[in-house]
Image (cartoon, rainbow, N blue to C red; front, side):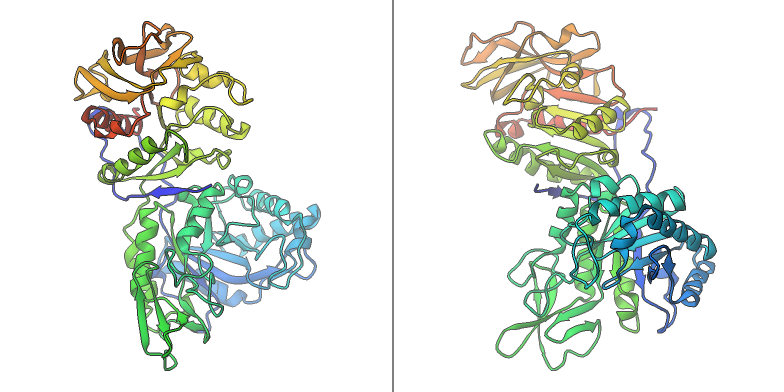
Length: 569
């Protein structure tokens, strides 16, 4: 699955159509996370971070507990809360080459004992949570034991740790850039956020190891691709923390920020990858690293994506003045993740031109409103908890079949319990038995108890008559306006016949140009379901990209977003 992301940050200005605004509960705020590996170089500056992951503890030799090699250092880090009482300190268990996870997680008794020892460590050292850095379930790349059952057992491990430490403590994990090895959809109910290790994605074998975007100088993966893969795996943006390296990598191995360039003086800035590189006299890239400019670019990127925050490996490899840590702090200290909308759209086919035009138009419009948008074109990642992180769902030409059962159940819960708003276009009423998929009765009832019967295949213009001019969706819209080149769907009955449907506008079938004998009589074109808690609106039109040239359509779309995103008390 490919995610397109149009993420834009600011505070949402809902406007007068909203009435009294009730905000969703704020997540635990932005994460400015620092991995700290020991205190041999001194304690970190607690004013530069919100979270510290103290690295590393390990699974003990008997597989039933936590081995903490440096308790004194951990205690010193926890003492930093005296200087920053909002600081969160987590114990990070694992790291590259840290084994025994596979054996421990495979045995219910050992797993339970380990989880209880995590809770004991949290209590003893007054910690705020546990971070699991198992690199990586099901593979032995780091020279550790592994099993094909590791992914399933990882889920059980996170479940058991959550039960042991309680709901008031943090449970996080470090994840490889490809989002492999972990079933994120299954662990989502147990975790607070995911630290995406968007580094070591290249190096001595070629390519910058932490390029932000894809360029000829990037390694096998980029930070942008890492975020998209985690989104596609079912991790909502509010649970993604982007990892950044404070070191360079290449033919000189691993080099801390600020170290000598080893005689390579040809430093080049890649305007696409947004990272600095060093080239030898032959013009060959030999080293990729980070600087203040590249770290700033990564922070700007994560803000544009509406992510939870940023973290870095590792505080001690910054330079003596901690320029990179200060950069992360200065970029993110005043950042708050914006509101989020999920757009479900068709990635190919006859509706793609409309989808492309709609998404392109939404960019500047949503920028003004501070709305972050994630787009998907299948529903496989939508499982329990996924939609809860979004303030609205826009079904932009995507049919209500082919959805897995988990996605259906999650969507029903989202709509019936008013967890966010909903806007549907055109294909959302393609209701019936199609391609071997049965009718989704709940969705049919949501749309007014209708079943799709026919459509005007040659496309036709049609005049829309506003019936509810006082409704916020219709505010400022002409009482009569024309929609060009659309497919006018025909149903077995008018949704108006359903008592909980409020029709906002209808199409005059006598206005079709060219004329058509495919008619249904009373033909609502815009309506809302008043029986569910979610604010919602459906538009029968949505076939032609010409819609985006229509000022009345743009006004309808804008009004709809304002209305569904503002939940009245």
